[in-house]
Length: 404
View 1 (cartoon, rainbow, N blue to C red):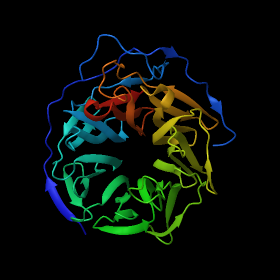
View 2 (cartoon, helix red, strand yellow):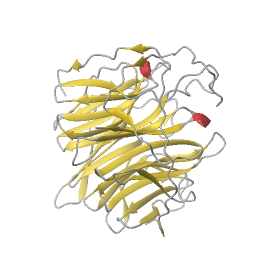
View 3 (cartoon, helix red, strand yellow):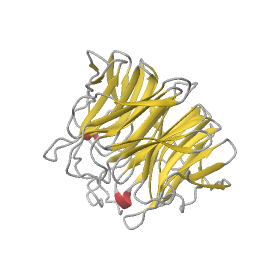
């Protein structure tokens, strides 16, 4: 099933870029909270709508490969200190979709790799089961996925030439890959069996992310209809398990809290009885988004309160039950990436550096705000990678941060 294509890798020139700056009035960061359970720039900055807060010294900008035009990095995955991948898009503008961005970290620097823009305009997800088992997903006129075997990329269009199908996430494990996304009317989960793609599940709503290990798959999203702008959904979780042998044969929808307007954007499985899912809630009336965290303890899904009252959460990763990290945006400090760390007892917020100064004549109100974030742990170390974008429209730029 699907159309297959192979091509060689091309490496482009590297240009170092970092962007930091001041300009917002400093304000103290919020205290840790204990939970009962788990364009042309002006010469002077304008008054900030949201204050700059203290920067964690552990989060530092790292130069990535220079991406042309409006650019963003949407997801990141690592297999070790000398092997990481980041995906997104570049050369975008309000009047064009752009081209795929694919970067690789070799332990010394980030370099740009080439994926044909005829295959995907944007890459939206990456997962690495090992240095020779990396999967990416993206979209153009048709949904697209590709696999890195340590030597070359092999790409497919798993839905063939079908329009209005898109992929949103991927998880690689044990020689298999799980892909999630949406059709014009439903959410879809697909499996790469090692030989072919197969439809594993279709469900009302749509999926945004997936996590997997042998014998267990968790996919999250919302039960709102795909493309719905009026009908609010609630958080959606589906769990696939192996019944006999390694194959996933049984699927059940998880009983999550009924939270109108809730959508889950990322999920991470520490163990089959310790799963974290993050996203946001859009309350009725168009008020600001509220962060959303759900936790599976092996028996039930529960909402977990975090010490941020407004904003959204985009990424989650963990090295264990007492070392969970979330990335996102705090609406009260929207020029800096928000990080939340759970040590098994309490959540502690921290913030990355201010990546862009607010200007009186900036093109958009959001031109100095963080737009997207992603995060991953680095196996074999205490390091973390975070990626994302700052700005909006023609003013959007990618960034990479590292936590040592």
